[in-house]
Length: 94
Length: 490
Image (cartoon, rainbow over all chains, first blue to last red; front, side, top):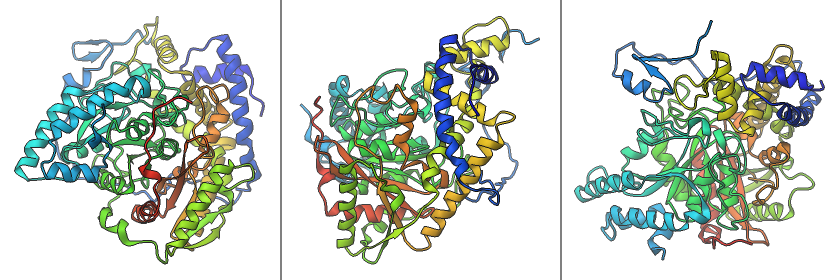
């Protein structure tokens, strides 16, 4: 599965990363090297193996649904790059 | 001039504090003065919190005077990796993206240290978003290895390791996603522990790869390591993956000796071409354990050599999802754009460094339509094979001993040109994150050029006590942990 510059441009777009042409060239080569290394996983037969998403047994954890103090609106907004009238302000979406 | 009290361990200085031989304010001032004096050489810190530290030290002195709620950490100056949220204190993850981020809350581990009466002198340098093995990917500075200032301290928790090694702090917290505590501990000649996944709360730990991340301690010796682990371990209602298990009395457990303990040696961790000095030091350490009555036997972990390849699919995949939150809306950097997508893309291009971008793209690729099965799902299946190997080995042995890192500390720039060569630094540490098991690095030798070498001990899930016990027995019989770096270039 050779990685092309087009693939890298596509992935950068999916990841919302603006990339320059020289960056695309560099990342294509570096990512291709890493993927080539990763290909060794195919040496292992995993047809009968279930995927393991979590290292140890995890179970749902429940707690009573009781109101508790939480961060104030001012605290939550305190790191916002642009804040107006209690909201995070963003550029136009539509 | 460095005050000699700073060379002591936590358990030694804690006794001095309790005996009123020194006050926490005096100790903290001495630590900060030394820290600031050598900081131009070592560069361990992103943010130094002198005022906050002295305030907490004064509170600790009141506590020590009253004799109530005094713990072994009360009044002791420590340091915190800059990816653990500290209320009112900037937390950057060594990224330009979070240059101005001031968390409105504390990570649970930070809260626990404060509750124990500990003092924090500052936030330590690291690889950007904990992605790296040399701390060179920090946006802010390059931390230097106290044993040779021309070498890296390891990573990603390089600042947390260097500051303890050079007596800027008595201990510190780091995080370990693929070796980021154990490898820098080995390269800086100190003790570092990655607890079992779930042993320590991740609440307020800024996420890299959520199924692999754990917070853990750096310490000057094994006893201190146990004290720090005891202080931060335990279930947390704010982290649903934290385990509902009692925390043992590590100080008592670790002193039980290793007579009859079964130690497994996996041949896969001693491949042809392994650095000879590393191989020799680790083998000598195993002989020492045997001398003390441990039973050494070979075990096999045939899938573990594939751990690194699986890791470099799984960790970037999780990272690409976790780091989607940095979009210039709620916190961190924003670069203006004509519309929201342009704003996102410009913000992320300017806020992230090259290693973070590489991993985000790698993960996005592995999770994208058409490649998910070939990469992500395949890596998850290999993850199970690796886990099964360890389960089988731990049916026969109590602890597994390996090298921590394949080499002693390397020079700046040596591996930054080729990302894969940097990734290979993690070859012995990643499978422990993949399997969730606990791992500890303890100093076990010196290279001819005067650089430390680490022995990695791997334990059963939630059996940190046996790791500490093994490391403690080894440490008692050796002098490696007593050596101090000269802070020189060579």
